[in-house]
Length: 178
Image (cartoon, rainbow, N blue to C red; front, side):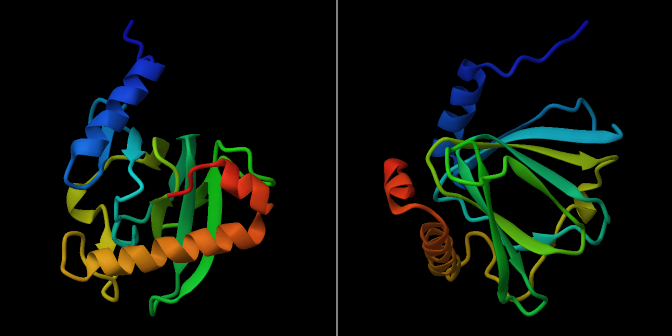
């Protein structure tokens, strides 16, 4: 019998690999094949990792995100790119913080890691077709483009502002929000 164990050493290695990657994130598939009915992966996302806003309407399957470590903001956008909602989730001890969420395929979204060492578990119905995995938002800069860093900095600042507005200031300062 094959059994995967997601130990602290395993997670710390993933975080280290994310820190030196160009995209500042690193994932490991838990599923053995893209043909499996349930696609699962662990994803270490650095605080400097810009995930371009996207949706999954081309292959319409919901995406479940569960925090393993850290603090995240799921940013939901309108079709025109206006931020409609920011949901915070994670393992930190903020008041009323959920541990995860599920996103419908038609929703434009991105995820921002707000603390160092943040890790997600992602679950999505399979099989997985990489050609249909993501539809990137036409109104947002592509990863690695000249405008991406400025856009990401503004997005992260908005997330931090909304988190501060919704939290006890002392609790906020206890954590190293990037």
